[in-house]
Amino acid sequence: MDDRKLLSLIKKDPDAGMEKLLTLYSGYVFAVVKSRLDGVCDSAETEDCVSDVFISFYERLGSFNENGASIKNYLCVLARNIAVDCYRKKQKTVLLSYEEAETEDVSAAAVERVTASELVAKIEALGRPDSEIIIRKYWYGETSEKTAKALGMTPAAVDTRRHRAVLKLKAMLEEE
Image (tube, rainbow, N blue to C red; front, side, top):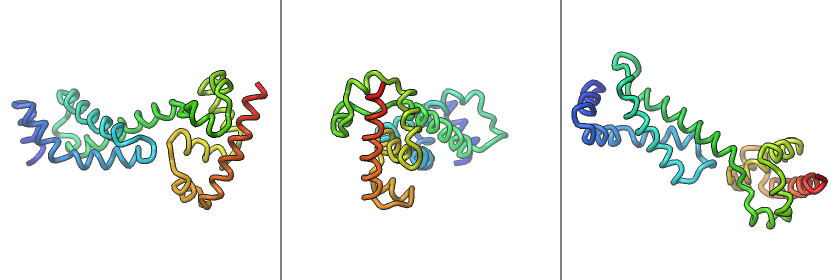
């Protein structure tokens, strides 16, 4: 089905048109979103992001220029932008829960006193690759194996550096 027919169907019968749009492009949009959010968001958050793309498309249907980009390209841009927004929101969320903090022997009281931006500044002060290892582990929930591959290290080296970085971070937080 070409773009004009699909747009006409969506305008005439929104339910049938959107169902056809989903059938044609849901896999494509999912692939775009997943490429941006893989390792950052869980599957439910990724699916929510994909849903947001189609909702956004429908809401912007009146401003879609049929003579401009194709529906596929338009969905790709929407998917990328919405996934980036989701990624940024996720970055702002500190995932150091009290259980993880206790596991890493960082006192919960120290974590409570520090705002997210202060914590990020302290983590960045650790320097690379320690700061990147901490962020990948606790912000993105990445495994040691995936982090090791990305940083060109062994998983054991990543675990050792993470442990030492957490101890340094703990000392920095307790100094305050």
